Amino acid sequence: MSDSTILAARNLTKEFRGFFAVSDVDLSVIRGSIHALIGPNGAGKTTCFNLLTKFLSPTRGTITYNGKDITSYSPADIARLGLVRSFQISAVFPNMTAMENVRIALQRARGDSFDFWRSDKTLRQYDHRAEELLHEVGLEQFAETPAEELSYGRKRALEIATTLALDPEMLLLDEPMAGMTQEDIERISSLIRRVAKDRTVLMVEHNLSVVSDLSDRITVLARGQVLAEGTYDEVSKDERVVEAYIGS
Ligand code: ADP
Image 1 (cartoon, rainbow, N blue to C red):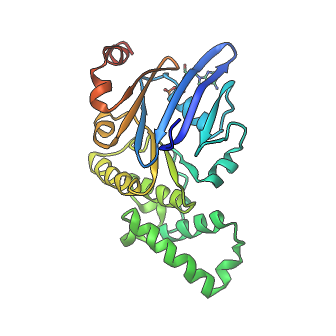
Image 2: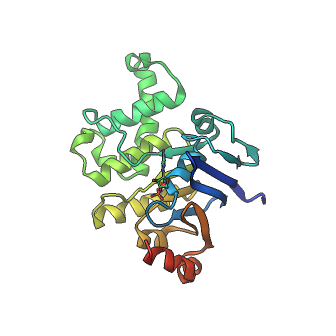
């Protein structure tokens, strides 16, 4: 593992009652890169993602983050180190405005009590950072809009803002483009590019044109194993990758 590796998995394996959903996967994510995990349905992407954030425990294998063995860490410990995941299903409070959602995320991230609502001074501190985050995800005009009135793509942008409230060094995105219109895809793509300027991103994504557009490196999984790794051009020319997609 080189110094430029931020997250690495070695021999990562998950067995579900005799079935190997993920089998001896090696993965290295380079600091500052956008890395995509792709593969046909059932390839083991979600399982891998859940193993890396310890929402599942591996049957065997190790995970290191910044050179530290985090295999036995809890999801909360991992998030505290700066490795933060966002969820495929929107996790925002629908009745609250975009601003309120980000304030709550900041309050949670900082472990502050809800008393902050009563103090104008503390509230203003949150507002400043909340405004920055809304600006970062392109939602500044929607600060006072209830989350439920935002388009699906903007809801996902808000969800990313609440994830950024945790001040992640590395972000794991589970299918950020799922269910999106082309306009939303373009908006979220440029958001991911912006977010990745000073962070590392690992994403599971089905949309191959998004993957080719955004990713520096790609790991292709099939039947729980790594089939290929490299740039989009490299992996898309690999016959085994073409076969895995056509055969799926
Ligand atoms: P992907 O995200 O690439 O579509 P998954 O990681 O969801 O793939 O699943 C990989 C394989 O593991 C699939 O065959 C799936 O049915 C199986 N699998 C996933 N989770 C479980 C589980 N909790 N119990 C048994 N099998 C599972």
